Amino acid sequence: MEHFDFLLNLLKKFHGVQFNMAGDKLAGISIQWDYPGKRCRLSMPGYIENLLLKFKHPHPPKPRRSPYACLPISYGAKSQLTPESDTSPLLDDKRKHRIQEIVGSLLYYARAVDNKLLVALSAIAARQSKATVVTEQAVHLILDYVATYPNDGIVYRASDMILCAHADAGFLNESQSRSRAGAHIYLSENDAFPRFNGAVLSIAQIIKFVMASAAESELAALFITAREMIPHRQTLIDMGWPQPKSPIQTDNSTASGVVNNTIVPRRSKMMDMRFWWLRCRASQDQFRYYWDAGSKNWADYHTKHHPESYHEAHRTTHAGIWDWIGT
Image (cartoon, rainbow, N blue to C red; front, top):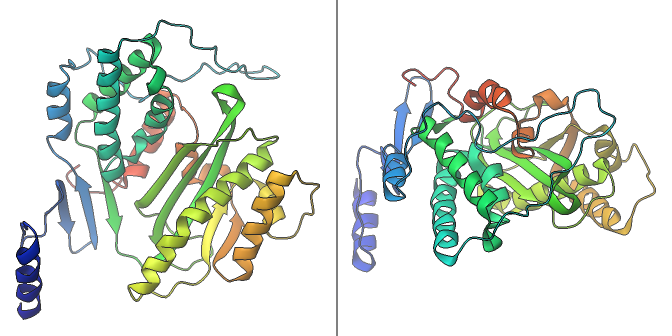
């Protein structure tokens, strides 16, 4: 208590500080502890209800199981068509500002306790500066989704504090022939295939440049993931948690072969830069790249607009609540 009192008094000297000795509240986030199970669950009770009330959005007449409209899949088709260009009317400044407010409010919530919203928010945010009627409809859909699940959360378990990641990419699944990178970065053990844990960082971003192949987009996702992990690795080391080679999983055998020197491809210059950067970091014992099946890649959730059935099958896993008592 002596050290705690010293720190608290020092902080009070320079800042307006509130403290909670129960340890169940931090920056508006509620923390539910399961000490016997060595786990905790983060949630924000009341946040969604207040958000819906603020923006006067009614509860949907029936549950909405997906945060974004999914393009219908043409089973048996030789190729899947890209989405049609949005030609709906532009919104006025007032309605556009409302969309930007909603996206900002939901982004805070998604980063804190519900990363399942990130792909939908990324797609909407990419169009919000030139928002249209279709953009507004997408916002209403995501509000219906959070109204269906108003108290989502994320569970973290105790681990050996080894930084791990799954990286994935969706090839040419965004407008203007762009691809999407996704990552699930988490803390686990130094195993060949590290066990699941809640994400300390989820990535769901549109890759700026047009990718020439699925392998190149997967390589770009590996690059984006590894680049984001570097400051986290250093932070853990500074905190006294030495890090071995951080394992990064990919479900693309070509990308895995390229970075592990089992395939020597003829590369474009953009692919070449990422290829050598990833190999350079591996040679410095910072990363270990390995392959596993796509069905076991947790970053896949953050790369596509999935149908409702997929969200229903995977949402509890990504929230980490499949065995959380009382949820």
